Length: 218
Image (cartoon, rainbow, N blue to C red):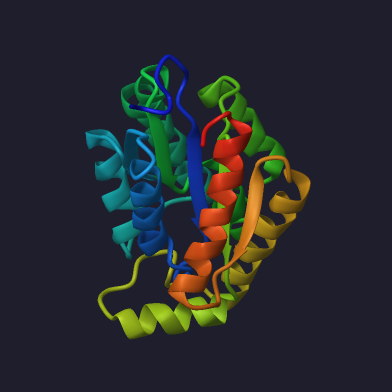
C-alpha cells in the first residue's frame, strides 16, 4: 500500500558541491522509499522536462557558453517553472513523493554565492515562480570542494561549466549551503559526505526514517 495514499506527496531535494555523491545517494533514497511502499518520482535540475533538459545542455554542458550571470539565473528559473508545472506539482498532488537532484538552494549557492547575484533578487524570482512551494526535506551532502574535485577526477569523463569554475567559486558554493542549512534548520539537514558510501547511507537512512515518522509513516 502506498504510504502517501490520499495525501499530498513529500518533496525531498538533495544538494551539495560537485563530487559529493549526489547521484549515488539519489539512487539509495529512491530505493529506500520504494522499499516502504512509497511511489517515487526521481528528477533533477536543471532538467526534468523536455525544455529543462535542453536548457541543461546549454547551461551545464556548453563549456564555451557566453552568458551573463543574470541571464543564467533567469534561464534556471524558466526551467524550474516548467519543471514545477509539468512534473513536480502533478506528482505531489497525486500523492507521489518527489526527489530532486538540486532545487532552489542550488540557485542561491551557485548563481548567488558563486556568481555574486544578490540573494534578494533570487528570492524575488523564487516567490514568483514557486508561489510558496519549498522542499519538505533537503539533504545537503557536505564535502570540501577539494575532495569533490578529486572524486570527480577519479570518476573521469568530461567536466561541465560549474566543475570548471575556480576553487574560490566552489568554496563560496559550499559556504552558502552550510549557511542556508543553519538558517533553515527546520527542513535542511547536513550530511557528512566524506565517509564511506555505507556510512553516508546510514546517516541518510536515519534522517529519512525521522522524516517519515514525523509524517505519520512507519
